Length: 567
Figure 1 (cartoon, one colour):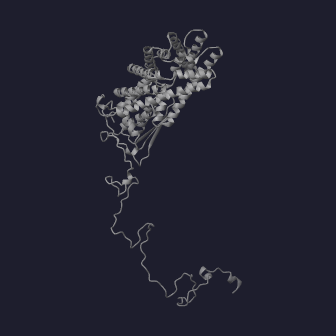
Figure 2 (figure 1 turned 45 degrees about the vertical axis):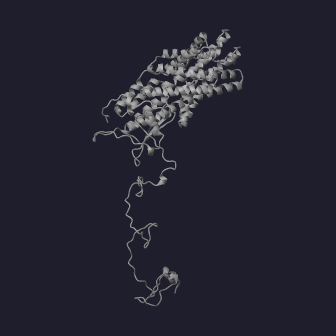
Figure 3 (figure 1 turned 135 degrees about the horizontal axis):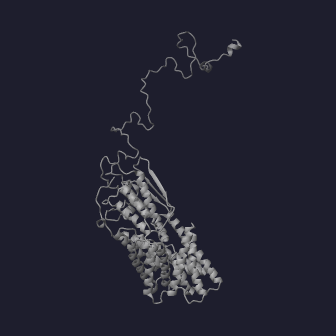
């Protein structure tokens, strides 16, 4: 063999070195190379009929191990459909929690806000479906995006008016369900409203959101929005989508019930009434009223220039303190503390404080934190304004003694009760309440002060406990009045807590800081914070008690207008 022949390529079988045995020569007489895995001649296996090619799972039952009873083929279904072995009448025991599922009764006699609040606190799967709306077969339903937009606009007005986050969510939920959208989830934070609706478990959800950039105190507008939601949630009163949009546009365009000069005069009367409440006389009443009205006009000027609310409160707190210092330096025998305290009463953010604590107690912690942070900033603005004036007054030689703290035992219970009612009346006007609610709020504020005075001044009970009980009665009566009149509870409670606001404790804490007595100042401000928390918790507790044990207000007493839904 030559070198060239040796360089020729050989097959794999030839390279393997194995050849077919000589038991049978090939037909052509030539040697044939095979693999080592080839079956030797004479040891052939009988051919087996090859089954039809198919793929099986490793979980398939092997041949010979068939089940004793044939199993019918399970039809193909959705991933959300229950298994074929599941029956609602014979559910497996482990599907039910050991403590059982609480039975929640939703009756039509309850006000809509209670029913919506109950459903919001339930899991989505356990919420009852709304009653189907009867309509013609060829009549289309309302557009889902428009319903969600209407819901967000209503929620925006309620949140901007001061309603709690849970009440806003309940109203939004009621609007959606009134138009047949049961699978909706509203979400409310301090400045953002969002709502999501999912038509079914297999459809894509529709989500919309709206930002609340401006908040204005107008309880007349708030009551009108509440009546709109009340009509939408009533099955006997038909309000079409277009009609609801029209009513909402009218609500947004409405004018305030009181002009600006009435609001300025009310702020002065409020400060004067608060000064009498803490022991002031006629001169103190006039001085506190003038200081509060001047501060109100300065705050309006700052608001017109676009300054934030922090600086508005700082500027508004200066005139009452300056007038009190001026009377002291002039040698007028008046209680400067009563003048300054009366001016503080008109500025303390009681409405935002109650709403913030209520959101925290109902589980809306983000919104509650934002509201309480807003209260802290406004409170700091008041502190800065008063401290600046007190510091310069002390440097000028004004003798401001903390011994002038009101004792409440000066034998003027009738005067103080009248001052408390005047304070609640003017507070209601500042909140732009409807004229029909002012008298009831005034009586509620008078009852709150009588209870507080009887417990604290006569009974000797601590001011925090007395304030909590009086605020609880305010919340209870406010909830009862709102149920009788099918309206929001805010107009009946916010102004009535005015006489209980911690104006005196705030002033004497600030005075101690101005006199370099930090310990006494911290004690005073801590007492003011405790009184504020007692007011907020008492109002919320009174409202919850009325919902739990009292069944006031029913659908039978409502006005009904039976007609077609219009969609």
